[in-house]
Image (tube, rainbow, N blue to C red):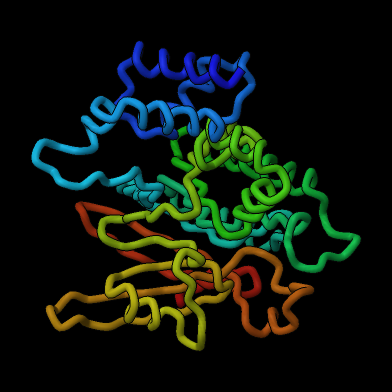
Length: 330
């Protein structure tokens, strides 16, 4: 059986002239075009490697150029995606943690965005909490995974209905959404592989959570967002904390940047030696401030969101606080 499959793979590579493609890409294409065989991408990839090893001249034709003395094997590195935020007025909502959100704070932020006639809404990580599949100890009365999925689905569809078809909505995944991918990779790696193979690194989360119905663009948690030179992070991508995290951002990133993730609001301004002004800020959250797992949450966390205007290649950022149902500048 193995020899028959290898012969099929060999003919597929030859007939489609796939010698210059990465081996994993060839394996994925073969599995998609031969579903009746029932082989995994990894098992086909083994065949591809052996086949290309049997035909070194063709296999190396794209990898080793004339005069090059070394064969460089295929790298498994992944390139971090970058997204440019379109110009306009944007509301940036962080750490909603559905269904453990604060109804009043979330309503205040959405009403403010509606009043300001925003052109776009960026859901900047941890829209979902995924408490049910957390690796931490859980209480029996927490929301189920189905409850969490339905909460996010209802919110996205309702958000689209409230703001209409013309407002852009982007959902950047955060470390809490990453719990879903981590759980799948740990407990159902073959299903995770099939989802990633067919739908990309977001594993069809757009479909499961109704983002496709609501016309919400979903971007991966490691994607960097550029807003006319202002870097927008969720905050887990490089990990920062401490007493003054925005100052640490300025020191380490050496550029203007904003993030959520820490559930509190603060900012830091400085000037580089070349005269470039740097602003770094942490935005507040929109989840409950009474977290069972963190006794000091009511003392340390704050409600808030961000507003950013992108115009003529520049940016203007406002860090907003929500206190007792009212919006203040921080």
